[in-house]
Image (cartoon, rainbow, N blue to C red; front, top):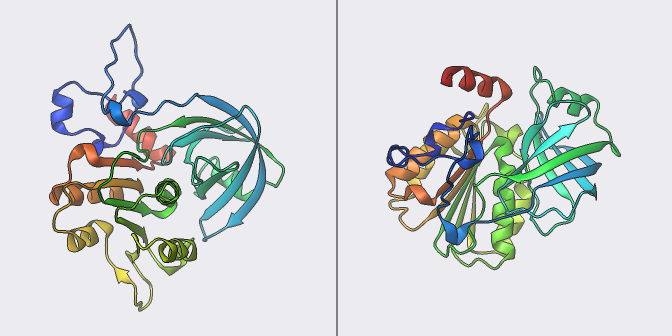
Length: 288
């Protein structure tokens, strides 16, 4: 198995021998038995050649880039999925699509790591018109369209990308159930796309938007605390909900525990935790 988040499979699922197909590397012939067949998706795997058409600095450490597909399409994916993206001659990195699947251009949110290998290049050298390779789609934390119960969508930092795609897609497809969106960041300067989500909420009364600060540097009228604690405060029973989460591993893992405490079913939790390359390397060494 390649590295994966501890919360991805429950102890009961592990005891039944279930694995994550997206993180498994078969060494011999094997039998594959899919689950959740009613919500399974199948998209052709594509290798796209794209052109950078917009670069926007949205916070001190997050860039939003838009790519136009020039070759290799059409590119179909489900809201919430991600792709392998190659900038220049650098190693591939995983980034979630932030746009809706029916939109022509691809949108990615990229958090900058000063000591990283790839993101410093993106910040300092990436220019409009540059070529970027995109391969995908990948990931199982995608929007389940057949679900008609309430939705809780939780994003931390650049984890906003797949959650944005899920929320926008659900609303565009006419979802009428309540959608509770939580965006958690450390301080005021880490917030982005707030007006975008406020406008969505104005046009869709079933969408509730919550922005949470975990470590504000000044007095604020916003809600403060950790997302997991906020979820525990806001809900008494989440049975029948679907939950979608994306962001830093600690945020995702603690929020998942909070959701389970409020009686949400394991199969109704769909999450992606974003690990840095250092974290992935540590997990690989730990799992050896």
